[in-house]
Structure formats: C-alpha cells, structure tokens
Length: 80
Length: 427
Image 1: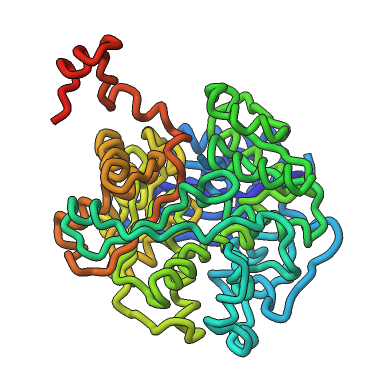
Image 2: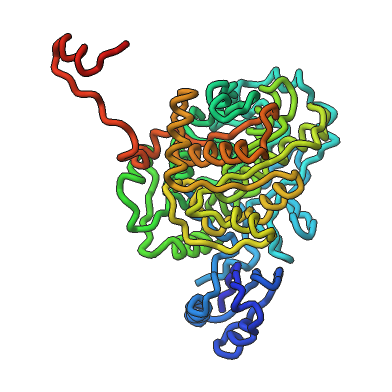
C-alpha cells in the first residue's frame, strides 16, 4: 500500500459536490483529510490518499477530469 | 513504491543546533519538531518554520555586532538557521540599495530606492541568498546531494553552490524545455534530469523523490531553512536605509515566500530593537497578469486563490499554485498593502524604464516590479513622499529573449564622417 499527500483545489461549480465520498466509492482508496478550507466560491483540501499506486493514479486522473486541481502537498515545486 | 508519508530518516546523520535555534514549528497548529530536514507537520500538514530563541538573540545582537560581520548576508547569521560558521555562499547578499532619483522622477516618487539583486553573487539573482542558507544547512545535516526542480534562477544557484561545495547536484526539468534555458547550468556539471511529462508531472515526481531519497531538496525538505534566507533582503534594506523600516515595499510574488519573509525580517528587527517599529509599513505584491493567482484573489477580496496555468514572459514568477500564496495575501492584508499585476508589454516597458533611468538591467521579474510600482504610484496607493523600496530580484542577461522586437535597431552608417554627420547628426 502507498500513501501520498495532495493539495486539491475545488472550483466553485464543484464545491457542493461530495467528491471525496465519490472517490472512496469508485476507487479502492482511503482519503484522510488533514486540513481544509471551503467557501461559497472555492475550496481546498489537504489529504492523504492510501491505496495501491495504480488505483491512486486512477483517482487523480478522475479528479482532474472532474475539474479538480490536484497538486502534491507542496503545490508548485518547479520554479523559474 | 515506498511510502513517502511514512516516518523516515529525515537527514543522513545529525541535526546540529545553535543557542539561537529552538526547533521547527508548525505555522498552523504550533507543534514543535527537531531541526531536521522536514517541512510539513505530520498532524495537520501545515508548513514548518524555524523557531528562534529571540531572547537569546536579543542578548547578543546589536547594530554594532552586525556591522562587525562580513559584507554579506552572513552579517545577520544570528537570525539565519545555520548552526555553525558558514562555509559556502560567503559572498551572497549586501547588494546595493540604490537611491532611484531618475526612476522616482518618472513615477512621481521622491523617496524611491531599488534593492538591486541583479548583482547578487554568484548567479545574479536573489536565489543566491536562499540557496546559500539551504546548502550550508544541508551540509550541517550531513547531506551529500542537493536537488531542485527549476527552469531558471533556482537551478543556476543550486548548481553553482553545489559545485563550489563539491556536492552532487540534481536538477529536474520538463523534457520539452528549450535547450537554451538550461544551458547556463551545464557549466556547473549538475545531473540535469529531463522528465517526460508536463509541469504537473514534474511537481508530482519531485514531491515523491523528495520523500524517497536522502537528498537535500532545497524547496521541499530543506524549505524551512531555505526560505529564511529571504529575510536578509529586509535586514539589508533596514541597515542600508540608516537603520529604519521603509513606508512601502513592492515585492514580486512567485511562491510568495519572498514577500512573507521580507515582512518577517522587518518584524524581527523591530521586535529585537535593532530598528524602531513602523506599524505603517505597507507590503505590496507584484505579479504578472499571465500568472496572477494572488492578484486575482486580492482583487476579489478572497483569502483563497485558484491555481492557474502560467502564461507569461516572466518565467521566474510563473508559479501557478504558490506554496505561500495564502500567507502572502495575509501579509498584504494586515499591512494594508495591495497586489498589482502587469501584462507582458507592461513588463517589458518596466524593464526598459528601469534600464534607461537607473542603468539597471533587470530580468522580466524586475519589469513586473517596476510596472506594478508605476501602477501603485499612479493610483495614489504609494504617495510621492513615502519612503519606498522596490525589490529587483534578477539580472536581465537571463531573459534577453523577452526583449526581442521591443528595442530599436542600431543606427547603420558608412565608415565616413560625412555619413555619421548626415545620419546620426548629434546635436
């Protein structure tokens, strides 16, 4: 099993959707939220995803296709 | 695949400390940690910061003590997270603070200064400050290898410092980066790893490598130490102004770390009694319109920002999801400053204006700062008699391509005095 840490940003149109519940139903991953801030206009969540690596990869692909911005916990690492 | 979140040996050998360093502290929940190569709180995932023993520092640090130190950022070593005497990057910092009278006149500002890091040592950008601190700390922690993910200034500085320290160095870049971008690095002989993927893929991979390998990844596991080097910009500004804090500063925002650390540096100096407190200091941020998540949040009056895909000529500021974006908004808010943004043509105009008035050739990030300074002055957010400092963070020789097509062609003449008189016709 692998555990990876992510920062996810939810756009306004996704804020009200139970997306983390969705991924725990669709994929064999365990989301473990550590920090979050959600408002009417947007929201972010910092969490750990636990599961087999290919399953985590599929989860990330799915989230990105739903319009969720997914970065590593450190956010942008690549600097100019 | 191993487990990046699992407890692991955070540094190869040791965690040396000094009487002035207490540990690392979570910025969110306040939990304390050893002075190791870690950057995130295990409990709340908040970022870790160096926790100083300010009482111990207060007992020894005076203006005279600082002035006895070297002509570099190491004169402020009591407030930098290095336990022993530094041995690498000894000439970074103490760059000129220029009284910018001609630029000030053009902008209607009577007391304008430019902090000129275009001449920082050894690689001509402010990154030499943060990397000097990071590499000294990495050596103290027993690391033999340093790494970073960068397409420009950071890669330059890490590669140069690693070379001078005799350390192994890995630089990660996207595979489709133009060769010229990384050419300057190769002279230092780092291992440049071109990742077959986009910028998101490079970020993700580096996060995993940072957790997996016993390397000092300067802006991942060494970030709490690395970021502290930026405070020296504030310390030097205060000292060079005659031990005072300015009324206004204008700081470019990439990750947001520089802006927050300049604020922190001024707060440390005033709380230690090195300078008088100046509650009226306003911290202003500058972003490129093509990568302006902090500006957009500021304009909308939000504390949250939405990550963006960068599209700007100011590559050194092109960070779509800035790690310290939230904290930079916080500093701007509590100092009653503002955030401005500059379009690509405005950035070039800013570069040209700075060059033709002050003789300083800045990279595109400097153009962003000057363009935003101009906007702040025009709308009265900076008043004519405010003591103002604008931070110019990198040398124009690094971003020559941005000027293509913007500058006049040379005046062509025949090799005769008659041709010179006829075509150039100097008055």
